[in-house]
Amino acid sequence: MNERLTLGLDTFGDVTHDGDDRPVSHAQTIRDLVEQGVLADETGVDFFGIGEHHTDDFPLSAGDVVLAAIAARTGRIRLGSAVTVLSSDDPVRVFQRYSTLNALSGNRAEVILGRGSSIDSFPLFGYELSDYEQLFEEKVELFAELLKGGPVTWRGETRAALHEQDVVPHLEHGPFPAWIGVGGSPQSVVRAARYGYSLMLAIIGGSPARFAPFSQLYRHALEQLEQPQRPIGVHSPGHVAVTDEQAAEEFWPRYRDVITKVSRTRGFAIPTEASFRHEIGPHGALYVGAPETVAQKIAANLRKLDATRFDLKYGMGGLSHKALMTNIELYGTQVIPRVRELLS
Image (cartoon, rainbow, N blue to C red; front, side):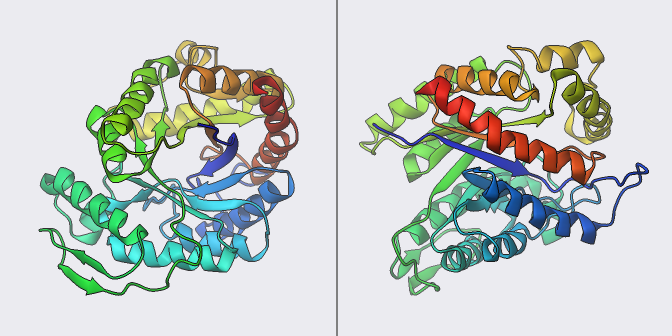
């Protein structure tokens, strides 16, 4: 297997703050996001992803629309979701949106599918949490059928059946890359292998090394299912600045406030400065520091996890657009070349 090393950026569209530390509007956040995607293309980043959320802090409920705007102003970078909450969406509509993006961008679209670690979209679109597992299983199966192209026949319990249904727009050059995001479930790893998806390991806390058995399980499952080997990727949060000290100083208070807020509904431990220092160290899940520090950590963990894709989830609510643009520029011009050098 000779997979290409891919180094990308993901964002949840966190609301940024202006120079007076006041939150900007949702509209300005979205306009700034387009500029960030264009800069990622200009600085050599391989992939730019937008995660789906439906809250005041993360107003990116239609990431595919923003990606289309970025596609119109770029010509190289791959564009996709990070992640699409398939459980509370319709697989046919997701396929249509991303096949449209694929056409507009000249075959640069990707999609990362997930069940959603936050559940805001379930009541919003009228889905029951009691159906959490069944919704994802059936919809992942249907999406895999849609990617094959041609008329689709499918039957399940969570949406209307399809019989020899033509779904448009047709794909020009075969299926676009599709991944399943996994945050800690062996069942999800096997599901990705069974339906022919690549595996994206969402590592947001703790030691990345603990996910190595998931990579091994995925490789083994593909072999047992007589599927070809597929890429494994890693998605983790971080922040790049000129120095380690500056990166930590900018990121820590924003990270503390955001995680403390979501801990009320997500059950996360409230971070302390000591726990933060551990997470940005060599055995933690945060990639915070100067370009060399971040590059060394990315390279080390890609080796440990048998992975050839890394997406840095940049940004944190409260950071400024200027800080994010600096992060992107340093990541594209310094971190990416250094990771390629370390892994060559």
